Length: 477
Image (tube, rainbow, N blue to C red):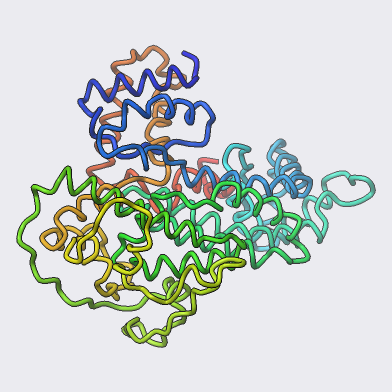
């Protein structure tokens, strides 16, 4: 079957109809293939029955990171090609592998081979360099003495190693963000704007670096292509994090404006308007669940340095509160914007500026939530879904919106991994399995992993092991 928009739309329509989900779809996260975009456009009228189509199509954040990094890898293609040639030269001959093993033993280093990266997975390039760089001394000497000269020079020069080391360090931010964004046991939507800010800052820091600026320029262009306009879901998820709300979101926009020169004053107004509109839809749909309000507990918790940039300063102690933090001025959000935003953080005042027809009384849940103090609990153990569950009596309708927003995955990596499992089921010894048996095996394996909470590990364990388990003193080698 052709992987075109019509077939994708037809298959999605069929599956959601079979499961009775047609009017229950909030968002669909897909990679950046053009066929997926066209398919979602066709599905818009079908899947808008829940609360509209504002969040319906979400682009996979990890695929965007992949595109950003690959734009930079193109610049270093010759350098990376030299390392690939060297690794292939070693691995392609049993005699060379034996010679390298003897050399490593002679110099007191544990002998090993090295894995090659894959074009379709940039993080494999990161892992290739990660496992190769610690063995620079032995590998470089061996390749220099064994490999023929290239244009009168060794295949790997000191310059190659120097560039590889700084490039590896530079890639670490993107690798870490990819790992976090591909998680399944915690909400990723409230985290993505943090990583967008970190990546923007990372690119900005290296933009004028003598060794990396030729790499950063195309990467920053690709970043701006996808993330200059912030997806509305990212903004809603960030605001619905009780540690951020509108105060933190306004500061994030100010910081992003300083980093990429974009004026976000109109976007802030648009977010406020859309937030009031979508809450009105939820209030109409779920208003019947509203119960008598319960008193909210006072905010407690520890400060985390990851929020220091957003709230304007580092804390000297892990238990200090943000209530005394002086916020930086937000009057210069973007070039030419001197009065659109100011230091008023009252949600009621901000919401009055929205160009929405939805009216918000002073006692509405949304105003109550946005006007209340942020929660100063910045440790890693903070569970945002638990917080909303515990406050569902205070915010019965808003908590439903928060649940829907928080549970949208910003990456398709985990679902793709589940489907790629069939490649390990259908192999040389199992080529006659029927479709029903393959489906059952895949489901059973996924259910077992779910029970053991192994559907997602912090690292891509299988990929990591393919580079790690290459030691030559292991009996199985």
